[in-house]
Length: 436
Image (cartoon, rainbow, N blue to C red):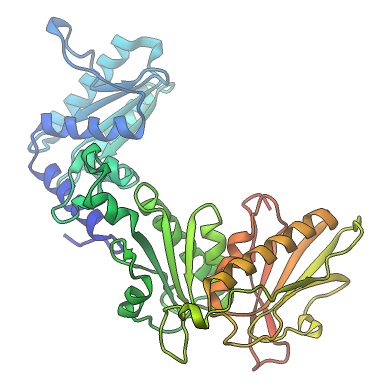
């Protein structure tokens, strides 16, 4: 049995325990497992039990409103003749008992070694016999994919809390004490180590006195380097899993990134500003992710915003947004743009690779980006696109991406800088909503 790639320790434990149950359980045990899963997937599920001489009306459970009837079959050994007889008897009986209220019939089975070869053909014949009835079949493997999609708490209710991970699961007695303190002081760590490996010991030092929540999630598109679009798709899936994994427990994310700027902005875009995110900067001179002490950390705001029109621009146009933090982005560096555009600029007083030295500066930068985007919405309502030319630290790139709301802002084109090419900024990715 091969182990699925990408499973965290808790999910892997649940997968192994689920597989064990399916392999060892009795028919009645499998039906209970099925019910425990389906009623959490859809609380409208109704369990059915046999009563006296009327039996169960050829129904092991149903969605009453949609007219969906489930029939569960999980013998110790599949015998083709018996299975064919079971399908015919149960389906014909369900049609007789439920009449026109039956809209869908789902055959659920516990597969250990696969179905006998003639069963798909039998199901095909039954579809022709009842053309107005939707038919489906769910294997225990398909049922696992439903389990996998449940929240951590719901999976624990079905499969238990793995030994050593009990602190990850909520229960009423856990609302105070050591478990609550541990959860309250934990961060889910995202490591975007696309360009260079990141030392996890240094990450733990930077988090202190807070603690990491479980193992870090490495956001590392492989094999690399991938095209920008493929790398973004990989990253989108990884972040979706991270958000789902931490949603019910510790929805706080600590970001440590050695990533290309377009992917760092895209990472912030995926996280959005609806979750708590703390970004860290690698200070090369000290080889640490820890922020400098209070005495050496600037807190004043030296950022200026220019280029937002004073009067509303009615005609459709593009906007070039230059960000100068670690180096100055000159207007001509956006020469790859064609046609007229409005030039806006966020800059610090003295751009330098050593500019970012305190979390307060990250907050000031987030406010500046928010002001620019609001100014574009208010003063350039027909803005078609924003073209981002960024020279700054990676944490601020993540923060910038967080401010871009696809429902409120036009698409944002991201450009990658390289001093080795004639046009220093080259198009990489576009941030936009699904409907744009």
